[in-house]
Image 1 (spheres, one colour):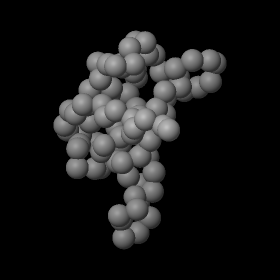
Image 2: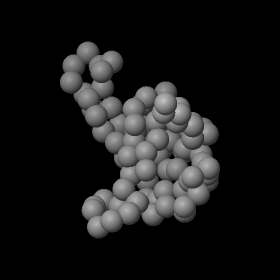
Image 3: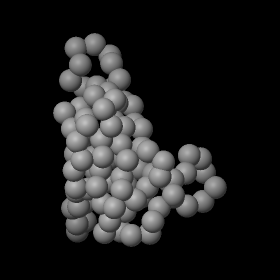
Length: 89
């Protein structure tokens, strides 16, 4: 499963099936997904003057993304709707 994160503006992918690790639980609801445990992504920050890691840490619960305070983007500490992915033509 994947979603575009409105906080760090990148795609986040979680593995919900198979034997790979890490793996998240998924409630099976494509309209209001819940994943567990939290999703933690670190990547080079393109806006930083030197090489720094940007951090995005969140919980996705019932179609809402709850960004934790240790996220380094402007949505840290906020809860927002999980955005729809654009249709592929």
